[in-house]
Image 1: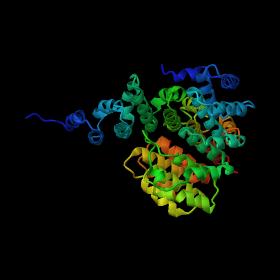
Image 2: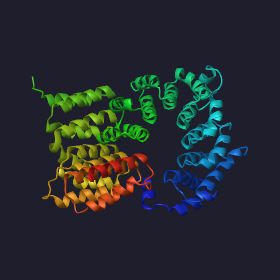
Image 3: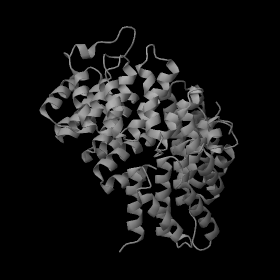
Image 4: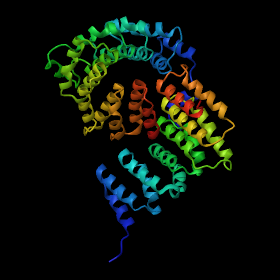
Length: 265
Length: 209
């Protein structure tokens, strides 16, 4: 019982203390933890939103202080979890930043906020020919854009126009399985057309457990009920199946998903 | 030539195994003997820090049921965190009332949400008899009532499942307290939607009208 994380359990910070930690900039590790906490605890304190937005400002400086960048990443995630609509404009501007992780987290949070106005910006990140979308950045295993989180966001926002669909479709043929899965997830969400489901179900059999886990969560997020037996049968630990089924239950509101979850507890 | 028992063969195979598939196969063979003599070795396997192998050993221990409980209860003295999680899972699934103290402790103090989730389920499913075991049953219910305030949604979920199961099976003087807790979890003060859905379902099942 000498795990350091138990200290936080023994002496929980009050919301007021966390807000103060978020406001100050002397101890950036305190600010970093505070930016995470307000999202995790879904803080509705009146100061939460302005302080999170203020924490994004260092991203517009040049050069960007590394620790402040880490605080800002947590702030971006928290704004998504809190579904702060009024953060839309700030997050959209971050999609144009020359920093892969900032674009990745901003796209994801815009998806959680369901920011319709961000759809053209997100689609812009998908543009270019298919070869471009396969190219690695020099000295890294990263692709040009955070395609998974952009595709995920477009699916969550739910604008099913022809132009959005046609931007997403080429990614169902991407060489990376998790990008194919994100594209399938988005198309299934946007069109409700079951033809996008079989490739996802097939990927649940992939030999790499990391891919099986990612696809499992994608299937859960689609709310597509026929995926239930495949999720139940997948060779993946119960903890993660429960997370996937939570997605399925929340999207479909079908009580049979709750029975399936009970059986995995 | 000396006679070698199947148990000795299985244990020797397990000791010789090095890769995960070998370890899984050897552990399965040991489980298939269905003998209490395999228990110490199966518990040892839980500490190998290999989830594929540990899940096989856990299933084997669960198959042995109450016979495995005394060894499992003692094995918790080990400081190995990984094996502790598997021990809680096995005890939760065996339903032996002797596990009550340990499951109660795990639900209140364990750091891993998946362990607290198993412990909550275990407390709801112990083989206790009403009204003889009323005191113990009440302890289980009070532990579950505390767990509906857990920070992790999956622990709250498991506690709702447990409270529902408990109230459907037994009379309880704390029924009203439970209904109150479930009502709160079904309201918008609960941020996680699946928790609201599960609490609403539990209330429907407990108050058919």
